[in-house]
Image (cartoon, rainbow, N blue to C red; front, side, top):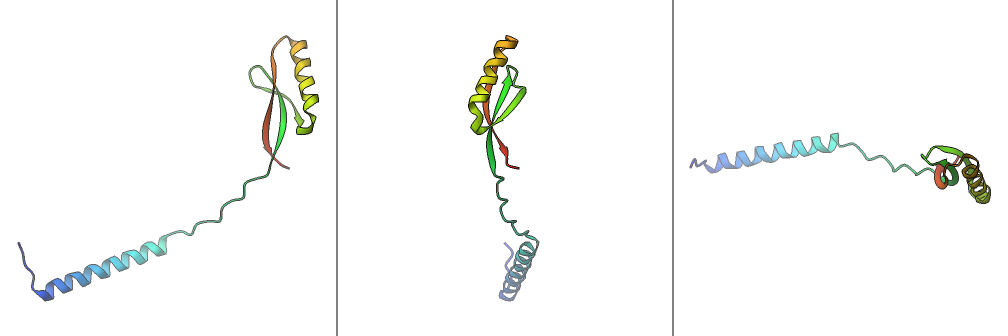
Length: 93
C-alpha cells in the first residue's frame, strides 16, 4: 500500500474537492429550466353516429342526443347494417 505524506493527502483532497465543485457548477449551468405546464385544451362532448366498422357518418352537438339516436336507428333500418352512437371529446373552437 502506497502511503502519502500528510501534505500529499491534503493536496489530493483539495484537488478532488475543487474538481467536484467545478463539475457541480457546470451541471447547474447546463441544467435547463423547466417550462411552465401547458394548460390542457378545453374539450366538449359531441355525439358521433358511426357505421359498424367505426367510420363516422355524422356528428351532433351534445344537447341533440335524441336527434342522434333517431339518425342511428334510421340508418340501421335503411341500410340493414348496424350503426352505433358514441360520445367523443373534441377541442372547443
